[in-house]
Image 1: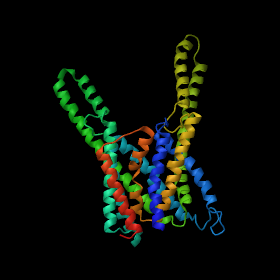
Image 2 (image 1 turned 90 degrees about the horizontal axis):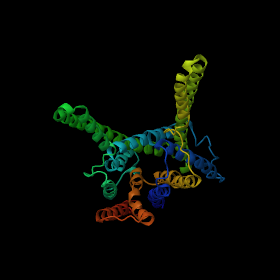
Image 3 (image 1 turned 30 degrees about the vertical axis):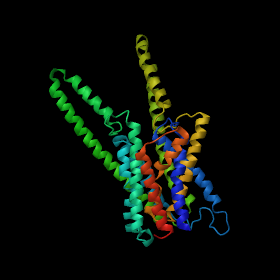
Image 4 (image 1 turned 45 degrees about the vertical axis):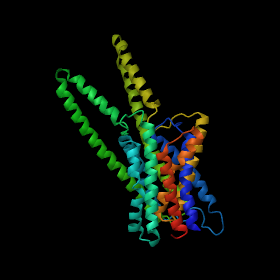
Length: 400
């Protein structure tokens, strides 16, 4: 029964995440850092309340009992947060910018296979092992999800990239490099074009290597973070695990944001001090010439204090804020709670495989919300993924 509940939890988590993404859609106008800070902070407050409510029964330890929240387990869970949420997400976003979504999706497909390897090595539990049906289901599910995701991304970027290779921002950079190179070398356009093309190819190749390295490191850190959570979080419930992990991530990002804001205030005071000193020293005819410089300093100080930097939360209208908070409820509160529950009820590779079917859920949700329609390749991949999931659940519950 626990295997069935764990499988249902693992399957429900990406559905809730998909619904949450459609709720907030493209409403967030700030940076990825400020979005992660908002999500982690709001969710941590929810997990804090859930920690108290989940320990109200007489048979449970008291909330935040020292027998549960031991220093060593808290540190290990915080370390898993550092790897999976802070560093892993940073690497994932940067690889997405360099490689584009389709290539990152293919690298992400390594996630369950790496989980099967690491869980057997680190956890050393026979329950973490997989049968032949398990490996077959994992291969079919992950492969089908990768096909569906890649096809969806190809349809999205087909109008932007004629060759459909989805290199994120690289195409625009390469075009700019070729254009600027030919402009500077008008006297020898042929040699300039050859040199520029070679530079572009070298730069693109180097960027791709960096992108793939970051994508692989993200998968490694994400999987190892999950392994550490399962290894050291067995005495916690799902709410407490997520409170420690998201609370640590929230505190770390808040500290970074506060440090950057303090730097801005210090720079702003320095500029204002320069302006005051010039006003005291400049007299007569020099005052008119210095007023322009003073105004520049004042405007720079004001801009430093008021510009929406990557570490500053953007202003949000009440309705937009409500939708974003509702999306956070699904994406960063309910979804991680179900994933943490599934992590201890079924083997880690099974949990991660069932948790990667979000692109499959996005098809019916997108059809209901936006009227999106897809071709035979996407439908066939969806059917294959459902068959693979059936193999997983059947293998664990029925004992195939």
